[in-house]
Every structure is written in C-alpha cells, then in structure tokens.
Image 1 (tube, rainbow, N blue to C red):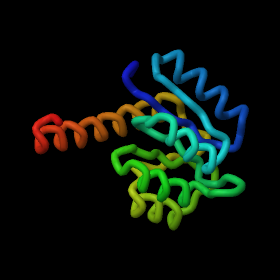
Image 2: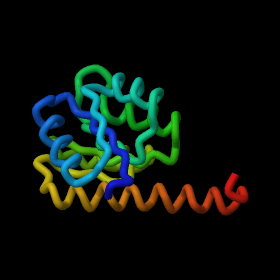
Image 3: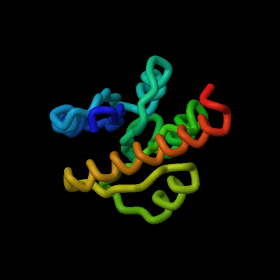
Length: 136
C-alpha cells in the first residue's frame, strides 16, 4: 500500500482532510485538491497512480475532470465518488474511463480495496507497455 500515490479531489474540505489523514496512516502517499481545476494543476506537478474524484463539485464537475485527467495521462486510474445516486452518471463515468464508482458515505475498507485494485490495474498496464517497448 505504501507504493500507491493518490490524489483526492472533493470540494468538501473536512471530508477530504479526514480521508487524507486516514489514507496516510495506511502508508499511502496522498495529495488533495478542492476542485477539478486544482486537480489538473496538481497533475502538471506530479502524477498520481489513482485519483478519487467527486462527481458533484462547483466549477468543473467530476465527469469533465475525469475526461481531462484521461487526456493528460490515460494510465491514471480514477475512482468516482458521489453522494448522489445516478445510473446515468455512473455509466458515463465508466465510458470516459473511470475504474469504478462508489457512493458516499463509503465504508473505509471498501474504499481502500478499490484504490488498491485501481493501483494494481495501473501497474499491470504499465508492465505490459514496458514489456512491449523493451522496458524503455
């Protein structure tokens, strides 16, 4: 778990801060952003393995941010998070390349497993690309 580099993107600061502390206690390298725009700025500075991305935020919504994240780096895995159940949003997120979709409030252990699974998928794709290119 210590190898996972995550970015939490949520406009609810107290939720973001609490979750960030809990993930860091589990050995994860965690950064945070309060908006889609801020998340894209953070991506310019460093690349996380996994982004936990809220769907409903002021300004750039989660689906738009997801699309832009995948444009920057298609290998970054994105787990969508929302307090508003919507099958259309979930389907659209998966079409745009989201790894999965979780409902708030999410159980912490379930979230951990989802982030670990997303990280494993990213590493799998990176290893396949490295094998095809000779590890360059």
